Amino acid sequence: MLRTLTTIAASLALTAGACAQENSFETTDLGDGIYMIANDRAGNVGLIDAGDHLIMIDTQMPPFLDDLESAVREASGGRAPTLVINTHFHGDHVLGNAHFAALGAGILAHRNVAERLANPVLNQLTGSTPEALDEAFLPDIFVSQAMMLMQFGVTGEVLHFANAHTDGDIIVNIASANIIHMGDLLFSGLYPFIDLDAGGSVEGYIAALDEIIGFSDEETRFIAGHGPLSSRNDLIASRDMLIEGRARVAALVEEGHDLAAIQEQNPLSDFHDAWNWGFITTERMTWTFYRDITGLTE
Image (cartoon, rainbow, N blue to C red; front, side, top):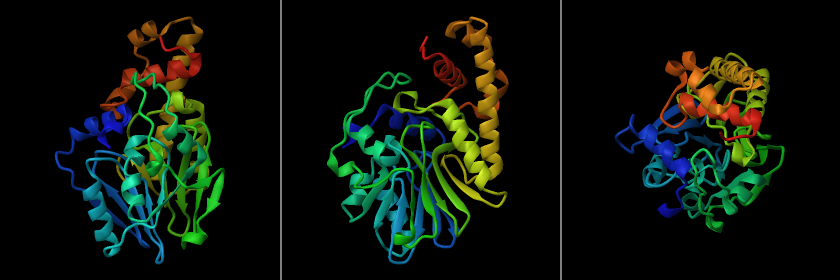
């Protein structure tokens, strides 16, 4: 169902694709039956081999699904996942849902994920409205605020963070291994995409990072939604950039400048080399701060 591919997912895949000419996946064995599976073309996938259960965190998107299934089976001794966890609703994390559900996996997510997939809205950053997805893609197991994973053989939990990247974000905290899959609450070393049209907010994103920084430690390993395997310092760097960047734009708004004038002043110029990338450029990050503060798009 390539026609259902969202503009957001396509943009993420195409911009990342400049760095990856093949569809092949790299699997990193993190120990304790936990794997990070990545191809630099869409959201990073997590895999937890819990014996009777094989848990897959996010499912990527076409056209990578056959390669992704092969990577999952290679890591797990030929098995298919029994449970998929969606960290949020964006296409580059969920458009493989139907593929893996057909192999027998249940799909767990926050309730807002099902709502967003079934009833999409206009995204003002991309200027597009994704098509609604049919039932085969939708979650059938729901979490509201938190859920322990003991019933699936994992010492850990999923935790919901409201109004951060979207209104349906969850992370997977594998406490026994001190590993956290962040979904898109971490774009490691990149400006984050904060989906203001889907309940996301800059302050909520900062608050989520703050809370996770608080209960993690220097030994915690983080699977980012996008980017390399990361450390607590990467979360701190992202949080601090967002705090400083928002403050700079807020100061210019307070002085009475409109978006065009703020873009002309380029208040994030010193962040550009470290954080700019193909989808969320310095200009788009400035727009995100401005809209988050004012509610205006221009």
